[in-house]
Length: 85
Image (cartoon, rainbow, N blue to C red; front, side, top):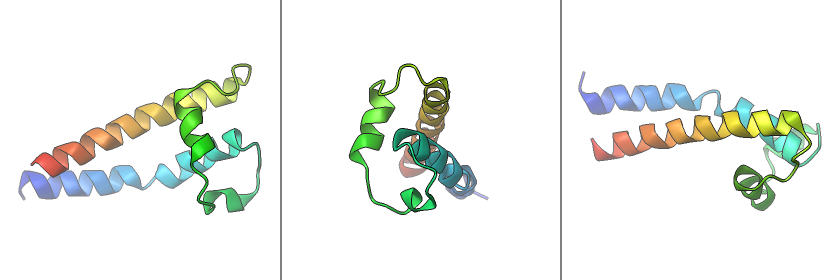
């Protein structure tokens, strides 16, 4: 197995839990428990929430944002490694 195949498998496996993490983060950002937030193409507030502290008093938001940022950075690094290999 070559490195590109291994990276593709790792990238795929790393992407599987992304729906859970994104759903959790979006529910906090948009302050809803409605399942439809997962399929709505609303991105501006979500992107702003990743880079700006929208809810400084909400500890759940802070920890979720930190974890989601780390998850996305690793996802991006895997994608770049796959693309460059």
